[in-house]
Image (tube, rainbow, N blue to C red; front, side, top):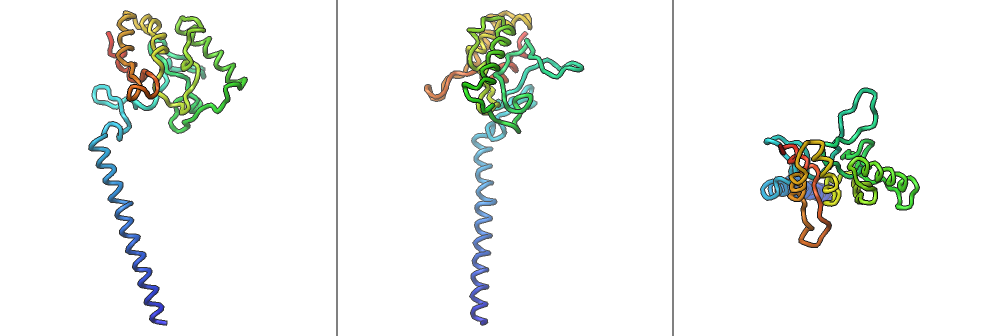
Length: 209
């Protein structure tokens, strides 16, 4: 009986030692090593790819945001601000670009509601930017899969140049050059598409005189 009890105790002590060892390795040492490597080699990405203005974090380069006019008393629907480049639509949350509600609309391409919504968006964007509906790019009327995509196509960015320049009293050629400077190429030269980060673009736009 005593021998059997001692055997059980030894097994439990061995299991406890293994628990403590693996807790130290996987619960403390490994996370600290990952954090140290991330902060040492990829500090910007590890801290949320924050965009700073005069040293103050103002946004994340990974998450888009709306650029709307302030809501007036009794107004429930936000209105896009013509002074800023506008992002693509977002289905993340009721107001869009909500990190806690990341996701798409889950409507298929032949869904009647989606088809009607796209047509309404196309007409609204065309009127807002002063262009023909047929020239409105697809990303101007469709949301991304995450609903948080901060990028738009160069075509959509260039489409907005004249409207932004007029609203701000700027030279359209200067605004167009600003957009061109923000066009990022394909990853490794062949992955993905060219894109413009709207958050970064608008930050530099705010500094233009």
